[in-house]
Image 1 (tube, rainbow, N blue to C red):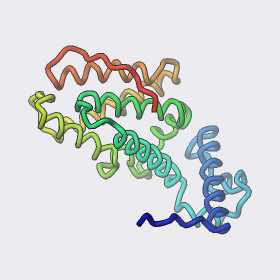
Image 2: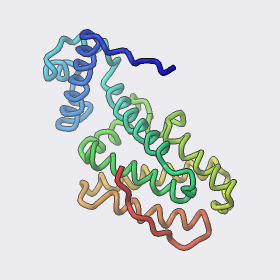
Image 3: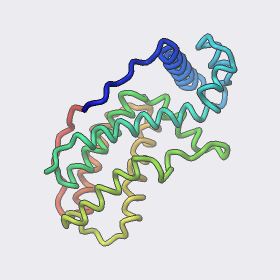
Image 4: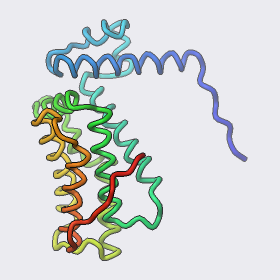
Length: 214
């Protein structure tokens, strides 16, 4: 028997709208003025709520950025789960990275990502970009294991090191895109790079795979 989903109460819906308003206000202001410059009071004034309301949903400004990446990770998981079973590990890796680059350039944008990278260099900020507990790491690790089992990935490198290399490459590409102010197509550049990478780890020439729409 299929369990019916409960309809959210008016109070729950109001709470969701309030949190979303705080999130949007925080992202807008941080993008415009920088992470260190924007205060909690700035965010609550922009969202037209009390300062106490902010702490009902977030413990800090940093947690807003963490939520942004949680949304990105949820997007990764959705795309990964929708891939056909016969998709090769090499193709999964490229498609996974394309999903990342598309989301970063199309949803987050260059301004927000510059703020994220700058905040990650702060000694007071939780280093969530390199948090091994993120679904990002788990999904890439699954792709590596599948590639090894299918004898696609033949590179003589420890799997854990390969994982760090692949995730590090993706961060580096996005960082370079930020340095250039988003003046080139991140999806195109990133796809070209990971075509080369899959060739490197599989011992094959650069692979050709078109960007997909998700």
